[in-house]
Image (cartoon, rainbow, N blue to C red; front, side, top):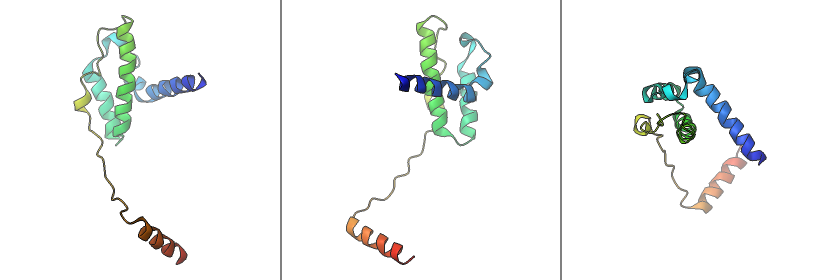
Length: 112
């Protein structure tokens, strides 16, 4: 269970750094989708697309908990999925002849 406490602590620190400066003073019931989108777009503007998605996922978990316990009526992150920039996957070439690759690699190393 130590790993669970560690994970929870990391997520709390994550939210404290990324969301709390913008919406941390608001009651959970008053947070709107446009406010959440503004926070997430600020993270994206830094070039941190994956971080923005992780913040959205973690915030959604908090809002789902709040809904289940009657603290708010909805999850303002629910409909924001298409509003964020998706991560561009860059596929790399495969090594089709591993023996030739290894030979060339060692030849280059030995020439240094």
